[in-house]
Image (spheres, one colour):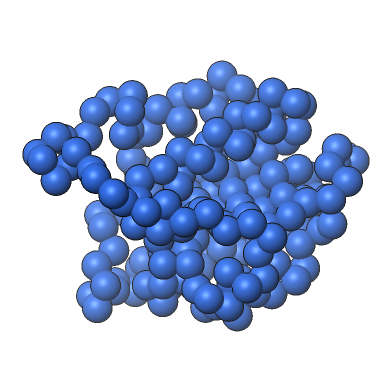
Length: 179
């Protein structure tokens, strides 16, 4: 195990219905790597999807690693497939192990708030992770629907609020901007 370069790691949450939660966490990861910190990003419910950040992470390895977990299909509220629960819980167990390992200065659990909101991960499990997080590890949780009990434990909470979105005018996702 190596010595972390942070003297105090905090808990950050990026939530809300607006665009930019994952993008903000990636910006933080990029800044951390630029300062020599080790970063791991666990992307919940983004399995087998091609995103530009996956290619960028390869160029920044070993300081930055990204791991996707989940089916490529959407998880539909009220129609949860048991495999989604199984995959999310396995990913959370792995994410927890990475946080507790002390091997990373920054761990981002991307879309974890959504997984909790959908009932794939119990709120109590996330609260326990926050309580057990090593002092020198920064933890970032992203996704819509952050639970109030998790928000209460965070040091920083940013809510992305949609004011206007070009998707509503028919603009499809663009390579390099949304993916």
